[in-house]
Image (cartoon, rainbow, N blue to C red):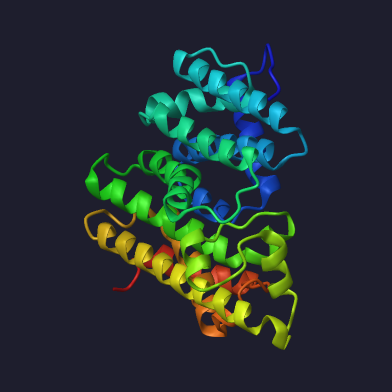
Length: 303
């Protein structure tokens, strides 16, 4: 976390905007349709998330990561006190005030990054996995909803948290092979044990890279069943988000719907190609993502 003594609010906003641009995030399209103050608020929120995520995924020692994330806890305190020291902190001050953002959600995001920093996370219990998704995805949703202009009510909360779970679980299923390659297994222990699938990253990676090896057929079948069950949970979370959406103005939350559409398309592709291929790369073309975004921009998701 780099501090500065004299950065202006405009410069801080440019810094946050550039963080979004550099990342190439698929959420960028959703941010662009917002009115300027809300768009700048989302840029600042995203830049914060990017900063703490980079710490968790970086090359620092675990001890240094703890210190860096602790520094961000202190910076969030300063944001809410009105005297931040970093470009991202300065960019957050106005959105925090204007949209009444909840300090606790920023701290939950940091907690999620601390879970990764202490890791790697390997075969967590389902309760721990859902605690993780609440922090790294649910917190983003809870900060985004008031920034979009949605009311602070039960429907907004249910939509934000259900969609956050759905997006993160889909992301986990999409990236099983990539995560195993860096020592991480976010798949829940209960399902791995139930279906006799590998419980560690080398084991998952061996299955993913084994092709049709008969020696690993049982574990490959088990991993496929884990994917099927976790995919069903992700689908259930998408349905819960759709149910909550009926009590909201879909136009207000269009940026979230663009993300929802893209990630539902990822989940559908994982389902239709078959869970026996869990761990191999899956992608959507730019044209496919654009088509999904256009559909969700123009109309609410179909029932």
